[in-house]
Image (cartoon, rainbow, N blue to C red; front, top):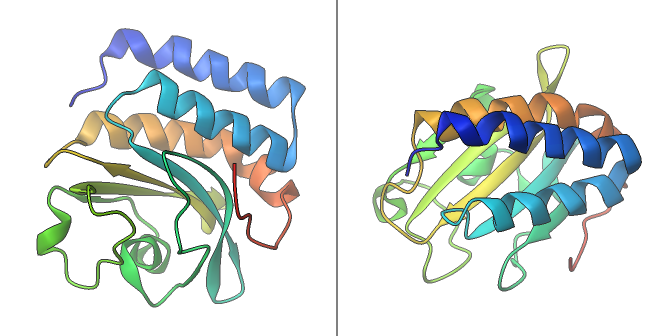
Amino acid sequence: MTIHPRQVTPSLLHIDSILGRLTGADALREVVRFLRMEFPQYGWVGIYRKVGAELRLAAWEGPAPTEHVRIPIDQGLCGQAVRENRAVIVDDVATAPGYLACFRDTRSEIVVPIRREGEPIGEIDIDGQQIAAFDESDRRFLEEVARRLTGAVEASPEEPVAGP
Protein backbone atom coordinates (compact mmCIF):
# COMPACT_ATOMS: atom_id res chain seq x y z
CA MET A 1 0.00 0.00 0.00
CA THR A 2 1.27 3.39 -0.87
CA ILE A 3 1.52 6.17 1.69
CA HIS A 4 -0.15 9.13 0.07
CA PRO A 5 2.07 12.24 0.02
CA ARG A 6 -0.71 14.15 1.82
CA GLN A 7 -0.25 11.83 4.82
CA VAL A 8 3.48 12.37 5.18
CA THR A 9 3.72 15.96 6.46
CA PRO A 10 0.88 15.77 9.01
CA SER A 11 2.19 12.43 10.28
CA LEU A 12 5.73 13.75 10.66
CA LEU A 13 4.40 16.85 12.43
CA HIS A 14 2.47 14.62 14.82
CA ILE A 15 5.62 12.60 15.53
CA ASP A 16 7.54 15.85 16.09
CA SER A 17 4.84 16.85 18.57
CA ILE A 18 5.21 13.54 20.43
CA LEU A 19 8.99 13.95 20.56
CA GLY A 20 8.57 17.54 21.75
CA ARG A 21 6.64 16.47 24.83
CA LEU A 22 7.97 12.98 25.60
CA THR A 23 11.46 11.44 25.77
CA GLY A 24 13.07 8.01 25.73
CA ALA A 25 10.86 4.95 26.03
CA ASP A 26 7.72 7.05 26.59
CA ALA A 27 8.24 8.77 23.25
CA LEU A 28 8.95 5.49 21.47
CA ARG A 29 5.79 3.89 22.87
CA GLU A 30 3.70 6.82 21.71
CA VAL A 31 5.27 6.85 18.23
CA VAL A 32 4.64 3.12 17.64
CA ARG A 33 1.07 3.58 18.87
CA PHE A 34 0.56 6.47 16.45
CA LEU A 35 2.10 4.64 13.47
CA ARG A 36 -0.07 1.58 13.98
CA MET A 37 -3.21 3.68 14.41
CA GLU A 38 -2.51 5.96 11.44
CA PHE A 39 -1.43 3.36 8.87
CA PRO A 40 -3.72 0.31 8.67
CA GLN A 41 -1.14 -1.74 6.76
CA TYR A 42 1.14 -1.54 9.85
CA GLY A 43 -0.13 -4.61 11.73
CA TRP A 44 2.65 -4.76 14.32
CA VAL A 45 5.15 -1.94 14.93
CA GLY A 46 8.30 -2.28 17.00
CA ILE A 47 11.38 -0.22 17.70
CA TYR A 48 14.58 -2.04 18.58
CA ARG A 49 17.69 -0.55 20.15
CA LYS A 50 21.11 -1.91 19.18
CA VAL A 51 23.07 -2.95 22.26
CA GLY A 52 26.39 -4.60 21.45
CA ALA A 53 25.78 -7.50 19.06
CA GLU A 54 22.03 -7.67 19.57
CA LEU A 55 18.83 -5.74 19.07
CA ARG A 56 16.59 -5.20 22.10
CA LEU A 57 12.94 -4.34 21.84
CA ALA A 58 12.41 -0.82 23.17
CA ALA A 59 8.71 -0.32 22.30
CA TRP A 60 5.96 -2.08 20.40
CA GLU A 61 2.31 -1.86 19.47
CA GLY A 62 0.23 -4.67 18.07
CA PRO A 63 -2.32 -7.33 18.86
CA ALA A 64 0.23 -9.47 20.74
CA PRO A 65 3.78 -9.31 22.08
CA THR A 66 6.62 -10.86 20.13
CA GLU A 67 8.84 -13.55 21.55
CA HIS A 68 11.76 -11.79 19.85
CA VAL A 69 12.62 -9.18 22.47
CA ARG A 70 16.33 -9.80 21.82
CA ILE A 71 17.63 -10.52 18.32
CA PRO A 72 21.29 -11.23 17.55
CA ILE A 73 22.35 -8.95 14.70
CA ASP A 74 23.47 -11.98 12.72
CA GLN A 75 19.87 -13.26 12.53
CA GLY A 76 16.66 -12.40 10.73
CA LEU A 77 15.56 -9.43 8.69
CA CYS A 78 16.09 -7.14 11.67
CA GLY A 79 19.70 -8.24 11.91
CA GLN A 80 20.12 -7.87 8.15
CA ALA A 81 18.95 -4.24 8.21
CA VAL A 82 21.55 -3.41 10.88
CA ARG A 83 24.37 -5.46 9.33
CA GLU A 84 23.82 -3.93 5.91
CA ASN A 85 22.83 -0.51 7.31
CA ARG A 86 19.89 -0.24 4.92
CA ALA A 87 16.14 -0.62 4.82
CA VAL A 88 14.86 -4.11 4.09
CA ILE A 89 11.46 -4.66 2.48
CA VAL A 90 10.20 -8.22 2.06
CA ASP A 91 7.00 -8.67 0.07
CA ASP A 92 6.48 -12.28 1.17
CA VAL A 93 8.18 -13.47 4.36
CA ALA A 94 7.54 -17.10 3.36
CA THR A 95 10.23 -16.64 0.70
CA ALA A 96 12.75 -14.81 2.91
CA PRO A 97 15.75 -16.91 3.99
CA GLY A 98 16.45 -16.52 7.68
CA TYR A 99 13.11 -14.86 8.47
CA LEU A 100 12.34 -15.03 12.22
CA ALA A 101 8.61 -15.72 12.44
CA CYS A 102 6.71 -13.88 15.15
CA PHE A 103 3.06 -14.18 14.13
CA ARG A 104 1.22 -16.63 11.90
CA ASP A 105 -0.59 -13.87 10.03
CA THR A 106 2.53 -11.90 9.07
CA ARG A 107 2.96 -11.89 5.29
CA SER A 108 5.37 -8.98 4.71
CA GLU A 109 7.88 -6.91 6.66
CA ILE A 110 9.79 -3.66 6.48
CA VAL A 111 12.79 -2.83 8.67
CA VAL A 112 14.41 0.62 8.65
CA PRO A 113 17.60 1.49 10.55
CA ILE A 114 17.70 4.35 13.03
CA ARG A 115 21.14 5.96 12.78
CA ARG A 116 23.50 8.22 14.68
CA GLU A 117 26.19 9.75 12.45
CA GLY A 118 25.47 7.19 9.75
CA GLU A 119 25.75 4.12 12.00
CA PRO A 120 22.73 2.04 13.07
CA ILE A 121 21.74 2.41 16.72
CA GLY A 122 18.33 0.82 16.33
CA GLU A 123 15.54 0.17 13.89
CA ILE A 124 11.85 0.37 13.14
CA ASP A 125 10.36 -3.08 12.41
CA ILE A 126 6.87 -3.39 10.94
CA ASP A 127 4.89 -6.49 10.05
CA GLY A 128 2.04 -6.52 7.54
CA GLN A 129 -0.76 -9.04 7.18
CA GLN A 130 -0.86 -8.74 3.37
CA ILE A 131 1.65 -9.79 0.74
CA ALA A 132 3.52 -6.68 -0.48
CA ALA A 133 2.02 -4.42 2.21
CA PHE A 134 4.99 -2.02 1.95
CA ASP A 135 6.63 -0.11 -0.87
CA GLU A 136 9.14 2.67 -1.46
CA SER A 137 6.73 5.28 -0.06
CA ASP A 138 6.79 3.41 3.27
CA ARG A 139 10.59 3.23 3.15
CA ARG A 140 10.97 6.97 2.49
CA PHE A 141 8.43 7.88 5.17
CA LEU A 142 9.93 5.54 7.77
CA GLU A 143 13.44 6.79 7.04
CA GLU A 144 12.17 10.28 7.93
CA VAL A 145 10.60 8.89 11.10
CA ALA A 146 13.86 7.11 11.94
CA ARG A 147 15.83 10.36 11.63
CA ARG A 148 13.58 11.91 14.24
CA LEU A 149 13.87 8.97 16.67
CA THR A 150 17.64 8.98 17.22
CA GLY A 151 17.52 10.87 20.53
CA ALA A 152 14.59 8.86 21.90
CA VAL A 153 16.30 5.57 21.06
CA GLU A 154 19.51 6.70 22.75
CA ALA A 155 17.54 7.73 25.84
CA SER A 156 15.60 4.45 26.08
CA PRO A 157 16.65 1.71 28.50
CA GLU A 158 18.99 -0.99 27.25
CA GLU A 159 16.84 -3.80 28.64
CA PRO A 160 14.07 -5.08 26.36
CA VAL A 161 10.43 -4.35 27.14
CA ALA A 162 7.87 -7.08 27.61
CA GLY A 163 4.68 -5.14 26.84
CA PRO A 164 3.25 -1.89 25.52
